Length: 203
Image (cartoon, helix red, strand yellow):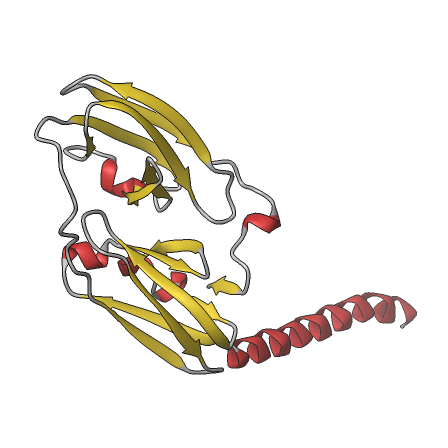
């Protein structure tokens, strides 16, 4: 009889702990608000999303398992795409409610593209990481990896940065000749908790 009690107590504690955690998670979900991003064109669907200055992913992937949950209050949201003007606005997130953000990008009249280009291909994980060229958002890794995909840039020196919340940034400098093709290979290293986006939860 005593032996049975010894074995049943840890089981009861485990069941109680799971039930307690379930209540906490349920309470957190009811407090947070959900963001849903909607884009109609390819440029809008592949645009990068920043929340309170932190890159969280690209428009079309931020749903289902990667949906964005935010704490209630004001949040600055920026949508960026190469060759387009940034879409930046402050939104108010309400607890337990879904906020639908329609992405509408206008072409940047000042955008210039080189007649002669070089190509940079990427073999980087995670493939959803953001890519920056000379400080400007260029897209995400998956757009520039695989057969028939590459990032076209003007010949000459460039600084390339690859970043994703929760990972250490990767930086490199390249000096490309006209029509040169090169491949950058790396795996982003998981970073500290301080590199994760504050007040943002992706399920």
